[in-house]
Image 1 (cartoon, rainbow, N blue to C red):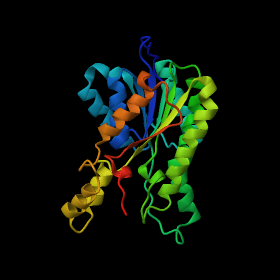
Image 2 (image 1 turned 90 degrees about the vertical axis):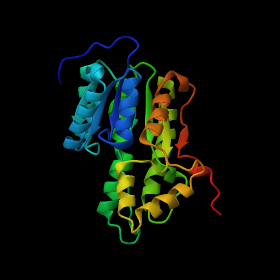
Image 3 (image 1 turned 135 degrees about the vertical axis):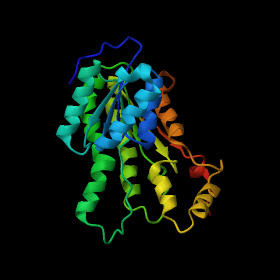
Image 4 (image 1 turned 180 degrees about the vertical axis):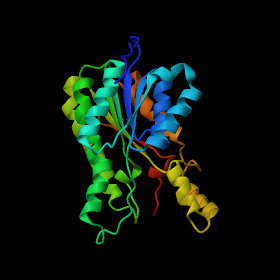
Length: 266
């Protein structure tokens, strides 16, 4: 587990899942900048190691406030171990960011039961498992907060995203249920719903199209702001929801989609 670090009174401890890249990596960085001690959970050991080394190089004064944990968030025992390790190392837990997720593109008539279970295990069940083992610690935390990273597809979807929209809709429902259940404990639970975001996954998608430049231009043309979000745009909203400026918010879903979700597409 390592030696416990004594946190200054104005510092909090956070766990971010899916922290090796994209929105999760940007969120870990944003929370570090906000003064948090951060446990980074990811199932890819190489990507996680690269991310932690990059953060330590970028923010050398904050290196001691990082703790990587190679974790499969669909495995309850792995989640229990990782959450305990972060809390033991940093003296408690105040923030949980459920960011880990997978995209899904299946034919509803051809998808197998095993494929269905795998998608929902990552996109929905894992958020509950992480919350389950974080809640006893959050109840003793400072201004405790959970943020679930959902998707624009929770409300608006398109062909070819089955059953991703169903899983992310479930995550919004989970957010509301947890917000009600945990409100007496002072634990706030909110969600952010990103749209198109400049992650490696999106870059790979464009690269795989017959005309990548035309494909990207078509996507950007649908955005009222004329651009898609960067991971930092989403991460900054996550950090806000965990901070004092959002103390009056619980059970909310906040779109971070460069306006795509307000566009009438008739």
